[in-house]
Image (cartoon, rainbow, N blue to C red):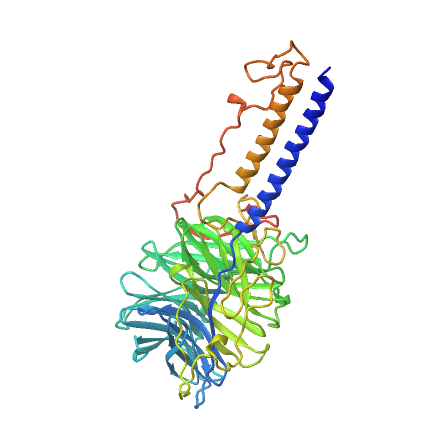
Amino acid sequence: MEREPSRRRFVRGCCLAGAGALAASHSVGGATASRRQEVPPTRWNRTYDQGTTADANGLAPAPDGGFVVVGTTESGDDAVSEIWLYKTSAAGRLEWQTTFAERGVTEGFDVAAVEDGFVVVGHTHEEGDSDQDAIAVRVDGEGTEQWRRTFNARPRTTDTMRAVTVDDQGRFVFVGWTSRFRDAWVVRMADDQSIDWAETYGPGDRNQLHGVVAADGGYVAVGETDDTTGDTAGWAVKLDDGGAQMFSQQFKKRSGDQINTYDDYNVLYDVAETRNGFVAVGANAFDPQTNDRRGWALEININGGKLWGTRVESDTHTVLRSVTGGNLEYYVAGETATNGSGDDARGFVANLGIEGEPKWQHSYGSGSSEFSAFHLTGGEGMVCVGSTAASAGGDTSGWGVKVGGEAVATATPSATPSSTPSPTPAPDDGSTPTFTPTPTDEPDGTDAMGAGTSTPAPTASGGPGTATPDGDGGGEATTTGDGDGGGLSPAVVGVGAVIVALGSAGVLYNRFLGDDGGPAGSDGGADGSSSDGTDDGGDGGDDSPDPVETSEPDTDGTEEVQAAQTVVEGPDDETAE
């Protein structure tokens, strides 16, 4: 007589349990969204106006917490352009600036901190003359020139140096290229200007090096080379202390097109040391004539073997120009635009996980803006430098933005203007600034005042604003948590809620319908199974799945020197030799 009411109670209980599981599922989804990492606030945003076209290309940290920035500016004298060197405080305020001109055209591309000062590298030539030499300038901490030296791979060649690193012995290593055989060119110089060695390298018909890092008792440089098929491949080369080549590795992307099977253009602009080897960044393009680019990051082991690769994209045109490793993560900076003509170009920064998965990314500025380099500060802030203009083709100004990290107190600017050009104050200074780029009007972004708000982390869809893995079966990239390390994973909480709901259903079943298959009061079997021999949703005993094993990426590679080996990445992110 009680069977029918028991069934109704059972059905009602199952409905309640199901509703509870559904509610738990929704609450977990909300927790996942709220735990995605936010874009850090903008601490300061300044332009540095020379009154003429000026670009900032590289920076180095100063001992007092400020930064020394190198670039190129048009000259008001007889020279066409000069190396422009300036120092800012930790808050981005201009403290001093100076210029260096050797010939009619002198340009600066990179700077590195050395003992009691800095070393700057670039090139110089007379206007309209192809005879171009590399130039290095050593300055003290106040920007006063200590010495300068021009040098070349061979007389009457067109030579340039684009990057510099300083090893643990205080020696400078410059990388660039020379027109002689269109080779890459590397020079190591002592602080007394003496050249220890100079070598050229080139697996392809045209070879250029854009970035270098001193590590592992030698040096790793990255750039581009034209391979035997005529495509441009990303190139990484490792040199020992004497300049001998230890590996030379090329990387290119398979396009998936039946006619043109590879991306025609693959280039690496910068490299940094990691716990497993080195991470490099650059760009790919299926057809370089369109000027469309896709940001590209990859990690290699100490022997040049690829560990992972990922696409980092924000818009139709995205190029990554600078990379630095953090605490089990990477930071990258560059530029992004709706097209490759420079219209609506913005500075771009992103934070990637240990295998390239996206954490957050954001664009800054308007008009025509780009980041060329950045330095990672305390609190994992990024001080980015580059150039900005009101529109494509307009006069550019030096530009600096600090993203995240510790807030920096700024002083109230003096009411009396100085004769020395100073950086444009941020909008909160109370003055009327010149054109100052501000972050683009994106949902939940940050403003120029540094008031950061929540920004959803990018998803791994491969569309705009995403990072897509491209290597070695790494699976889809997923967003990560907020890194606080506390509490249970939302997925674990969701699974637990469902288990609780199912367990509740089992209890209700046994309570109200357990006498269907046996005597009244039967519990369906003391071993946790129902009377008909099926599992009742208990703990499962030894039937639980085996734990999933995880391992670190394989960093073992061939011990022999690798020479100009090309790694081809498949269109669906499958890697093949």
